[in-house]
Length: 183
Image (cartoon, rainbow, N blue to C red):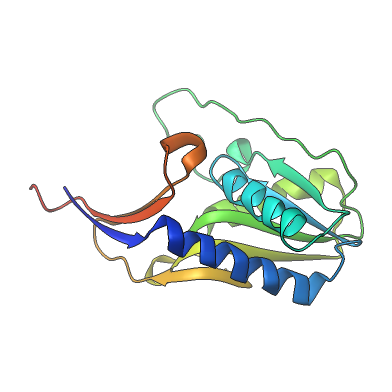
């Protein structure tokens, strides 16, 4: 297995600020908008964006939630091991709000489809947008595209994208991992 560094900590920092500015351009003071990180890994990105928006751009009224999609996935019964659900934390109304789903990697689109179903349990949003750190362009199974995107990656065959966050891996980085290299 070989890995190639796609984004360093510094590059991720720059992307977070660019994405924050794009969100401000569209959502201004966020009075009608909410950020929802898709569990498990989109929550790190959502928390980071919220921190940048609050600390660097003085956004005051920012609702941030976490959405578990485990039992809304179309493949959840295909796993041989027991599933462990993550915690959903949405302590605000999404009814008539502009919801921004946040996930680290957009791959097949199935997680986003599950999130679209899961969010309906909390109300009917006015609009739903998608923000991703990494968009794997040639891997989509569903017609889903990000509205805000940090970086596009053309990963093929058995390559995968691994996003590391300092909150759980000790350092921010994004790697392209080739699983065929040792075979």
